[in-house]
Structures are given as structure tokens and as C-alpha cells.
Length: 338
Image (cartoon, rainbow, N blue to C red):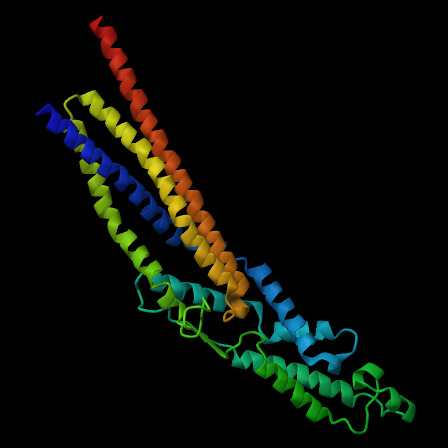
């Protein structure tokens, strides 16, 4: 009978250990993704917006090439980009993108429901650059015969060649920008055309990573059940173990091993998080939002790793407190007996 009770206590202790580890992972996921302030801190809005505007400026200068051989054009293009796509609009789009994905992961929607239309922004930007070219040409004096020999770009020699039409040049620049991948390689950015892995037959990312949403939802459903299992396990070991103090020490060791297993779980899921982060960084279909999404993904993974490690340490500390308390209790009783 004593053997059976010891065996059952050991079996329940093992169940408790793995339940503690699973509960730690589930609670950390809940803690990290239910805290709106924490999520907002994972997004570096200012730096991301600045990088985006600079990227748009560089790509636009490279795109239109010799048509703008004039000092200060970078600043003109940068100002046009900031006017066409204000930082406030950028922030709103990022929040829409993240909130829709969080709702999908949590099971509130079947797919991430976002559709960001940048065509008006792109049109505005193209119009500004095209109109700038037209206005600059029209303000120039007509080229002399000597200047016509040297002319390569109207703005480069600061004169207006008679054979150059400001309207034609303006429209050409507008069309170049509109057909380019500046901002995005699609005018409407939605979950349907956001591809995170080029080797996935161009499947939308919510198909590629449907397991992420399923795992998240499962982990949250398990929290109450795991909590009950752990409480029942502790009570079972305490009351069923043949020796009460050994049972208490078994509970202490259970928490210590629970902390160790929690850390091992972290090591197991680390490659999974790294794979997601790498695929997000290597994508080409989310250009305008690449930097904030990269920052969000890496920050979320770092935060999860940090809180899981803290949870592991807390389990181990609780375990040692139980062990030390049990030892002191035994020593105290021995002194009384002596």
C-alpha cells in the first residue's frame, strides 16, 4: 500500500511539473499580448517613420534619375513624402495592422481584417513631384544656343530647352512613381496579399502561420485547467504521500523541476520564434511597414523570452523556499523530541 501511494505521488508530481511549465508559457503569452501599453512600446513609431520617409526619398531620386540634377531635390521629395503620408496616418495604419492581427490570433476574427489603401497617398506624392518639375521648368529662361549644346537636363543647366514640354515631363515622372514599388508594390495592402515567405506558393501569411493563432488560443483555454491540475496535484501529494514532510519536499522539488522544464520549453520554442522573425524581415510585400513590423516581432519575442526566464526563476525560488521551510520544520521537531 505504501508503494502504491509513493508511486501515485511520484506520478502526480511529474504531471504537476509539466503543468507548471505549460501554465508559465500560457500566462506569459497572456500577460504580454493583453497589455496594450506593452504592445505599443514594441513599436518604434518615430524611428520607423523616419526610416520610411528616407527610403521613399532615396528610391524616388534613383527612379527619376537625370531628370532632377539639381541641388536640394532630396529635400523637396522628402517634404512631398511627409505631406502625402503624414506621420499620424502612418501611426494609424500600423495600429490597424497590429490590432487586426491580434484579433485574428485571439480568435476574434477568422482572418486579419485590414485593408490599407495607399493609392491616394501615392497619387498625392506623384502629383507633388510632377508639379514641382513642371513649375521649375516654366520658371526657367529659354536656353541659349550655347546652353542647348550642353543641355542634358533642363534643371541641370538652369534653362528651358524649346523642345522640352513641362507637362509631358511632369506626367512622365508621375507615371514612373505610380508604376514603381515606392510605398508598396500593391496599391491595396491587405492580409490577402501580404506574403511572409516566398517559398509558400504565395499563400497569405494567415494560412502560413495559422498554427500561431491556434497555439495561442489553445494556450489561453488551458490556463484554468492547468491551474486546477496544479492545485489538485499539490493537495494530492500532501495528503496521499506516506510521509507528510517528504510529500512537502516533493512539492518543493516539483516547483524546482517545473522552473527547469519551463526554461527547456523556452529553448525548444526559440527556433520557432526566430523563424517567424526571419521570414518577416525577408518579406518584400510589406515594404512601407517593414521596419515597425520587424521591431514589433523582435521586441515581442524578446519580451516573451524575458518573462519566461523570470517565471522559471520564480518557480525555482518557490521550490527552494518550500524545501528550506520543510527542513527547518523537521529540525524544529527534532529539537522538541530531544
